[in-house]
Image (cartoon, rainbow, N blue to C red; front, side):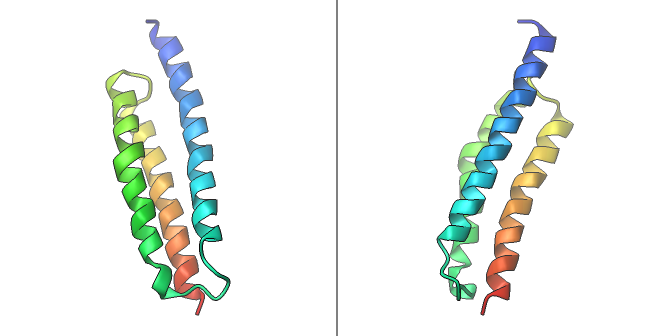
Length: 95
């Protein structure tokens, strides 16, 4: 397969995955009642687990098949964990 086409598909797939991550983050935020609080920090662990279990292997495979560069994978995974951090910050601020 053409490397340029691979890269184009990889870039498109990262955009789809970014949208999925935002959707997951929104779903976690909706799972917390308005008063929230630290009792719901387990959601951060669940969110991080989903990234490690489902997203990371897929992104790693995209690197292995030369659909994205290692730097793109790293940047994307940083974005994923930033979503988890935002959830954690929101939970610790709700008391």
